[in-house]
Length: 72
Image 1 (cartoon, rainbow, N blue to C red):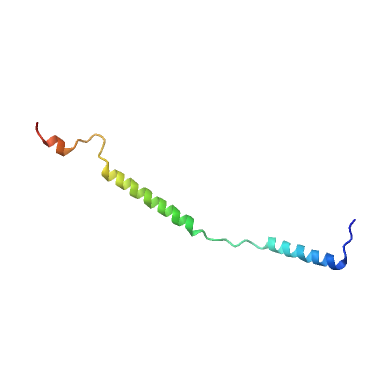
Image 2 (image 1 turned 90 degrees about the horizontal axis):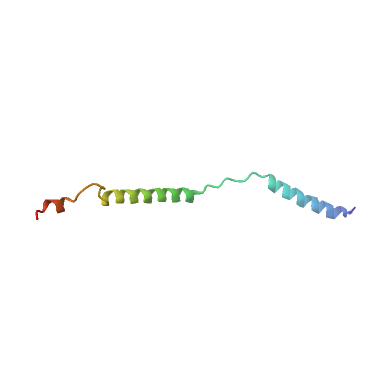
């Protein structure tokens, strides 16, 4: 069995108590605002892409009015 000097044991106990106190302190919750901003930016970009595609792409079964109005 290892015997420690009383002064060394006291220092070791203090260090262990300091470690235990740090572990027992409740962690502080941090707000991560960048995740929310990134999600909102992605949703906005997706909405703009869908709106652009809806406006620019003609319906599947439609005919162009310019081409059908000309007579050969």
